[in-house]
Length: 80
Ligand SMILES: [Zn+2]
Image 1 (cartoon, rainbow, N blue to C red):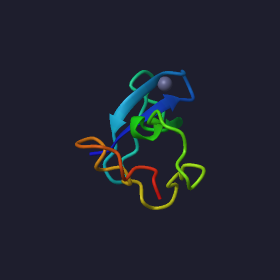
Image 2: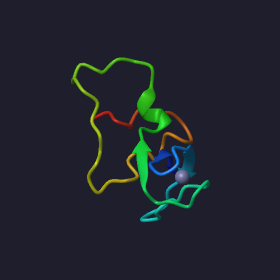
Image 3: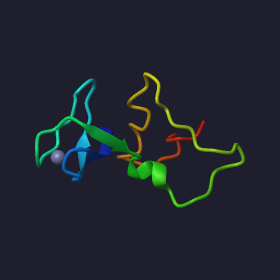
C-alpha cells in the first residue's frame, strides 16, 4: 500500500496518508483537498542519481509505482 506525503496548500500542514486508487486525500487539519504531493520517502533515498541521470517522476497513470517500497525495499521506485 503506497504511502504518500502531502503538504496542505491551505494551512501548510504536512502529513502522510495511504492512497488507494483514485482516493483523494484531505488535510486532517482543515479538510482541504488543495494538497501538494511530496516525494514519498522511497524517493528520497540518500543516494545520488544513478548512471541514468535524473530520477524519474512517474506522473503518468501509474500512481502506484512504488507499491513495493512499503514492505521490502525500494529498488523499483523511481528507477527506470
Ligand atoms: Zn490544511
